[in-house]
Image: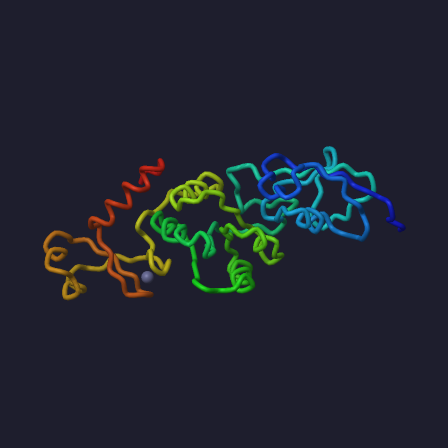
Length: 250
Ligand SMILES: [Zn+2]
């Protein structure tokens, strides 16, 4: 097919303004000069595929691999919350079975905040984008990041661009956007390494406790991965107060 001189019209929902800011418009007349998929076209304009909830031509839903034809008018919509990553959709035909995350370095504090709530959130300091996206793909983890380029990697199926600057606001953003299918289990996960914590009898670790901890606390949890011991001390109360300040009640 001779594609010379053909255009499609692409219209983005206002949600995408942040990604389109260098263009100062949300409507594009896009020249079809090669056989490009919708995914490639939309990402070339600055919007990562992970942020897209639906692609439509009039009322017809379209998938990422679709090759648009001349004169089509295509609308791009965001993902409406709550986003259930376990639901099969046209854009994501292979959903995950569990909601768990991998947190990028640019939103690093999100990892321990999610872990406070018992949410599985992996984090690796100093890994490359390639390695992070490989782990996300292999372990079926949702990526949380502020890096638009990272989200254009095809290995990443599910991700969320985090807009807030403060870590507690970022946590709120995640909790408001994703559909969590069960109640949180606060303080059930190691804040340092993400492994689940297990109850441990006081007598087994009493030799490792400071005198005051030994005196005032009787319930302890242990991380078998990094050997950390956890109890409900002043740090615990401080975390609960911080979460409450942004409307998260434990
Ligand atoms: Zn640990």
